[in-house]
Length: 357
Ligand SMILES: [Zn+2]
Image (cartoon, rainbow, N blue to C red; front, side):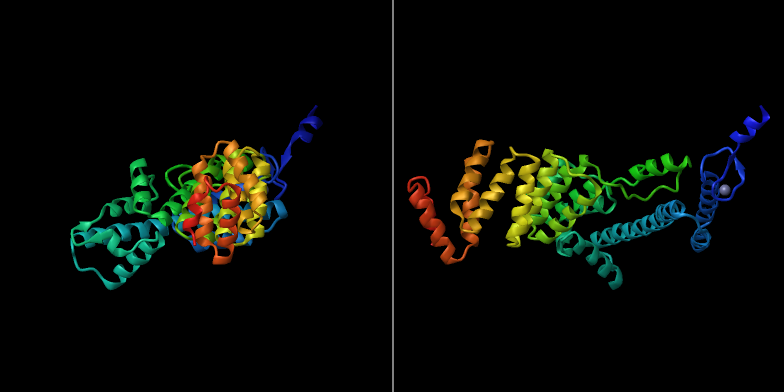
């Protein structure tokens, strides 16, 4: 009987001490609590040194890297962001009151404004802070903005800013007070309780946010920054197996559209085909593919996809808009080919293309 009990005794797989936890949890818990206590005392360098001194198998090393990133570096980055935010807020208040401010503060403020794709004069004019100023303050504090504010931004063509906003929504970078998703993962893996140290954010993508990703892409394209749209949509692929869904299809349509903007026709076509594979009824994807074939002067195939798009619910007006934008962006030779093709196809329906000389 005693032998059986003895056999049930657990040893920490890292240091060998008798413990009541599984695996190397004993050592993880000990190290984490020491790190936390150093961080609380703002002894960041010591915390970093302490962690880097430990060595272990690949599981241990993986855990260690994750832990140091999330418990040490993320909170420091977060603190820096808060300081920047305060500076932004204070400078804006001073500007609004027409107080003299340091050139360096003004410079920093301008840089911050540029990150949103806006100029200083958009934020503060002769009459004080503009409507944009209050929205920027919210964004600077990573707060959600209201629906009417989004509509206002759109009407004023602040597309770049909207692109960023939706990107933050997608990444879960708004609301620092929420416990980020990855903390759950750490808790699950180590049984170590997470507490106030977890204030930074670094949420891992899940497909609920993919609509926000495609919106972000859409606005970056409108802001004439298709390369941003491609960069951010590249980010999500490695995280997951891509299943057929409207959301996944929308991301590929946006990405394909961005490639089309850059005239990277092969990549654009691959994305559009992938989008159709993920959602065969997507009229957005068919419209995109139609436009791509038109750009390649393969009008028959292009028309096939435009017709498909209308079958799947696209407003025929979209078809006209697509063709207009292709005509606008084409050189005179291609323009003539497109014109001739469409007039021959249906000279009544496409009578308007004659305006594009
Ligand atoms: Zn141990």
